[in-house]
Image (cartoon, rainbow, N blue to C red; front, side, top):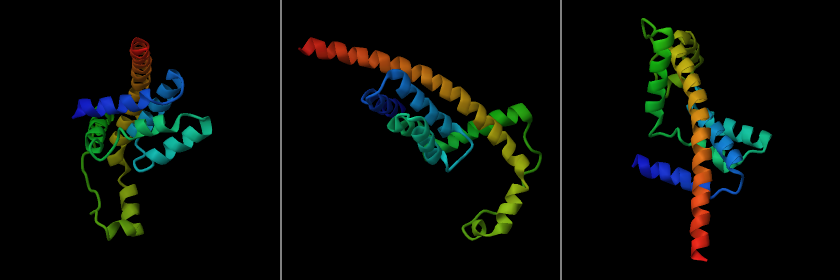
Length: 160
């Protein structure tokens, strides 16, 4: 299943009309936002950056959507663990009770903001992962796009 998802992502990137470097850059920026700690703002921020810098918007979205409901928990678990290994884990976890009624009240958010030390490992770990995965995804995407286009060009010339 993971291999099929990877192939689908790469097939979509190969079909985009732009230079391999620009597609890979847009994809890497999307991956950066996918791994960033700004949960819930990934798509919005990715599109804003794509519009401001004239990047390939589908490539940014493909990168952003690496973080989806299926990958959300593993990504943020690894990020929190990485951040905790670097700065330590908080001793006590006293998060306020979370429910639909609670999140609509100011008291919940004030209480949650007071527990900032619980979020430090997540923020640090996901920031580190965002930078590392975006650099790696740029290099891999550029390589695969160049190779994939060369392969497709050879096949097209062989057919003619």
